[in-house]
Structures are given as C-alpha cells and as structure tokens.
Image (cartoon, rainbow, N blue to C red; front, side, top):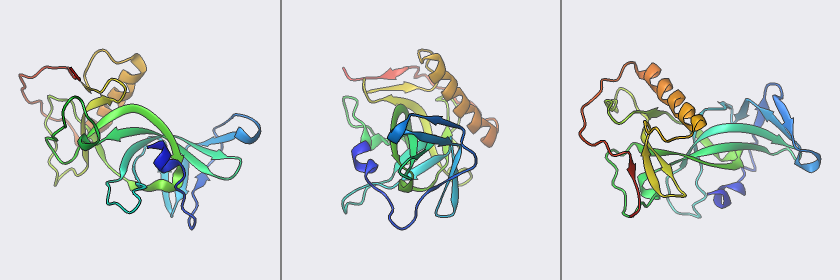
Amino acid sequence: MTTMLSNQKNSIKNAKPIGVVLRISGDGENMRSHYNALDFCGHTYKIKDTVLLAHDSHGQMNKPWVVIIKDITGMKNGNIMIYVQWFYRPSEIFIGKNMESFDTRELFYSFHKDEVHAETIMHKCIIHFITEKSQIPLRKKYPGFIVQKVYNPNTKRLIKLTNKDFLPDMKSEIEELVLKTTSHLGIIPAIKSEDDVDEMEVD
C-alpha cells in the first residue's frame, strides 16, 4: 500500500497544516513539525478522523483505501504527510480461505501503519466499532462501515474486538473506538450467539 500511495500527490491543490505546532521531531532535512489538523480542498481533517484515500489503480476501478489518521506532519520540503492506520476489506485478506462478508459495510481494523501524502485524502467516512454480541445498526438510520474484528496481516488472523490477549495499548485503543460508537449510536442491544471463537487463523 505504501508504494502505491507514497508517490501520489495532487499537483493542483496542496494540503496545509492548521493550528500551532504540537512538537518537532527529527533534524536537518528530516525535521518534521507535528500538527493536530490540516486543510485540504477546503475541508478540515484531524487526528483520529477516519477517511478514504485515493487508490493509485493505474486506470483500474478499485475501491478506496480506508484509514484512521494517527499523526499529521509538515516536512521541511513543504509536503504534508499523514501517518495512518489501515482498515482491510474482506476481499483484501486471505486467512487460509477467501473471506465472505456478512455485510457489504464490513471492514477489519488493524495495527498496520504507513505514511502517505495528505493529498491522497478523498473525504471523511463513518466507521462503527461493534462488539460481536451487539446489534448491527440499521444502514438507513446509521450509514457507515462496520468493524467487529481486528486483522493481523503478519499472522493472517482475525481477532474479535473483545479478545483479552491484545497488548494494553491496543486494548485501550479498541475500547476507545467502541465507546465512541456506543456514545454516537446509544445503547446497542446485545444479541445471543453460540459462536464464541476468538480467532480465525491459517491452519
């Protein structure tokens, strides 16, 4: 993904940082200024926003990438970069078999991160983090993507959001995202399930 996106840059509109510099990292030509927000094409994007990124498809009709913004930096050469964390579509992963989505809105969260040009941003999107025993929100009332599992691209495993084996910082991050969804949607009634398998993995 990095190869396809890192060189894509809009030559007409340029992203610009917004607000004060939060911190400075690096030195010399690698010096970076870190910001909480940026402006691109008249729209404001902030850290923790979920967005779609343009897919460098070489003329093919491919779906946009889906990411959450983790950091925004200004380079010494004027480029504005975003450090992002990836979501995967079922069609983009393989766990020993091809995945079949239960819902066209389904995505898998991941802790895979990359840096891309801010000009690859298309627009914001809504993502609902729903634990596996909770009711899926109705599409017409609550449009947006649905996440119920985390994908590990290294081990090719799917792991439930409620799995107890996540590292503390990962667990805290997931809980924050679930809480954000529940506060937006209200209480989501739990649904009974006999399937309590925590992981799907390659045999």
